[in-house]
Length: 180
Ligand code: HEM
Image (cartoon, rainbow, N blue to C red; front, side, top):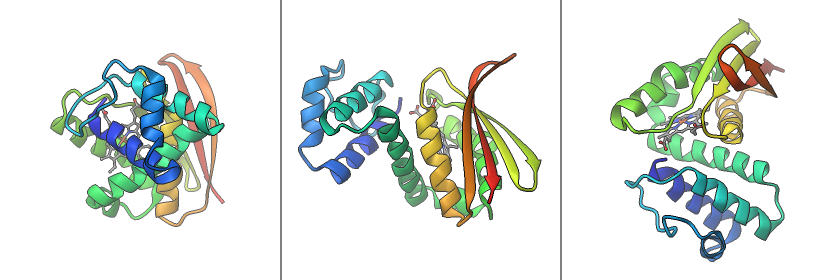
């Protein structure tokens, strides 16, 4: 996974839990990389989970809740660095559909080794939109944080329901979005 994901996790932890927390959880985690991340490096995605598990032990906050917050934090990073992607869409559903068919396609061109999920998107009716997340990594809470923050970005009030599914394409997580 790209170093940027790790440097942003570190940023979020400093912001929310203070300067020393990152050092504390790095020490507790015994990471293969040693925990010194640079934005241009590439690291094993399981280190994210090790760090968040250690953070959960320190803070008593549940791992999924922390991973969700990390998704919300990543939104801020993406919006401040790549505002054009957001400005190309005028509403949340068009933007979310563009993640699979445009944004991550561009990311892949820039970083051929990027580890990206896939999203099967479907407009059910004007109010409902479905996204099926599939990845070999268990980052559906990151996805939910990013989806939630994206809906907020367009000032739309959208209910997000989520269920694990299993179909002919294998396991996935289905997000059903409904305008309120
Ligand atoms: C401007 C907007 C966005 C940009 C530039 C972007 C780019 C990226 C990059 C660089 C990564 C890391 C790849 C790696 O480390 O190898 C990533 C991962 C990911 N992105 Fe996006 N992304 C954007 C928006 C979104 C949105 C809105 C969603 C949710 C619908 C999303 C879902 C994910 C997830 C869940 C991952 C983690 C990898 C996985 O689950 O397998 N991204 N994205």
